Length: 328
Image (cartoon, rainbow, N blue to C red):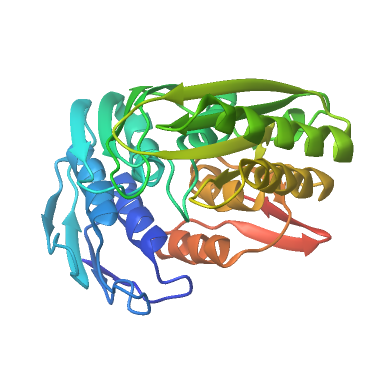
């Protein structure tokens, strides 16, 4: 059984999620020790357990240690097999992060999953980013994936629900060069349990920044619901680059839109093909399918993924020359 040090580099949930994903992809049993030792609440949180269960559900893995606060787990995978799964995070923990762990394994065999929890959560991509950037890039490489946002869920109540369908797919070599053409930008501004003008103001502010800084015209979508929780978000994207921001009590709606927009503008003006967040998310697919892409910077999350991939026998290279060039 391969032993993975959960405290290495980023030392957080990404390492746990992707270690079990790579375990399933390579049929390698793993033991992860020292999980999230430097966090305010060390060990596993509910969201990490949900991600492990999602991957385990695809490959009928035997697991030990899946409890909140646990600092050690074992994961012994079987063969990935098409299944229809339901996973409840049980909190407002991030649905997109659960799906990030599930998707590389599900693409081997197909299947469906319904995840309940938080669709827009601090320190995680929004479900709109997952759909419009992460999944859209994979679909451009040949992946068959559908994403249905059934209900939105915000911290602290959660209650969001997302259904994902996956067709067995063999990805083409990564090449993002055709996804960075100017002239295409999307904005989705969402709210739940708030007046309609909140989403409208977020979108208007985001569009003004993007148009003013880049000249790229935007397609805007507004979504408002009276769901189980109260909150708002704004996500902006152009090709394989995106950014998002969340509303909170006392924060002007305009500032939410501007934050998302400026994140996208920074990514576009960097000249890189992928934004800094997508870069570490795509490394597992780069390792599996080969290819290359560029990112604005070498982040700690990306360094962690490169190290973790090497532990499972995958070699990805990076070269820093203004932007970071990833290749496999």
